[in-house]
Image (tube, rainbow, N blue to C red):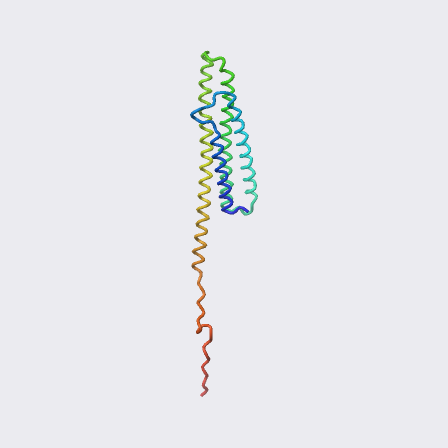
Length: 191
């Protein structure tokens, strides 16, 4: 059942998983420089790919609902944005591994002007790729947290409205003895 609470909890779980993925990214301050570093990057590409597949399944499950409640539509929309951001992060990690292979291949040829230029360019691409991977996952996480806040706020407004409407309903008058016992009929006099 896709209640606002269950959608919020699912999104909170996703936010935690995105946090865990971002922590695994190479640090911008200590960039990878060897192809051996690519194995951990490849593992992360695989993990992000599995998470993207889960987002696709979550979108598919929500898109088949008729009618789609607003909180479910908002969640599916967020999953789509998160999948896009994770795809950008995966793309950046792919560029990173490509450049690590370049560095590994050209490293023994250092000292030649063209090789040194290619290595410098590869270093810049590696730096940009790591930065992009971090920023895309951070944006995905922000999007998830924004949706959680919106769904939770809407749920709070619905609860408040229900509480107010419950207080507005007219209360039945308390039964008093006068109201409970009908007044005696007065005798009708004929003329």
